Figure 1 (tube, one colour):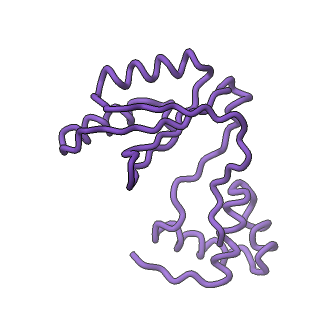
Figure 2 (tube, helix red, strand yellow):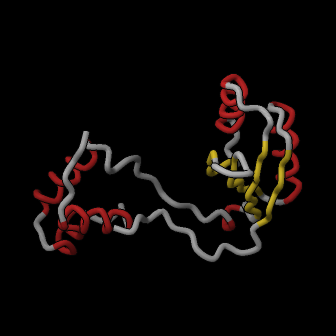
Figure 3 (cartoon, helix red, strand yellow):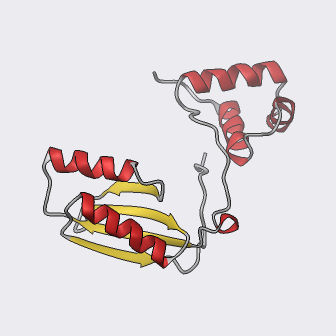
Length: 153
């Protein structure tokens, strides 16, 4: 379903991205509208699929997940069955926060969040026991400089 997004919708989306827990009154005040029209617009945006699941962002380090690895995967397997097995292996691993299929020399990149290097090794050993890969390179993030879920509306 395609939906037209006007300037007021954009302002509402910016506010929701900034803090989805704020009240309708606060959002309405910030976008220069009243509560009911804002509520109707949010419902329209949800039903159109523009607004998806609402959740909270947790601090990984506060919860002991101090290591973030970017895992580059090359495979010589490109058959549908291998891809299904790979997808199943990734979906069964909560450590994988993101997974992307790439164009170029690297086939996949994963963002893996774990407590430490030992936990990464356990993840790696489990993954390669489930699916065959040609080459895996793990890059440890030394410092997260920027991370956001906000789109530039």
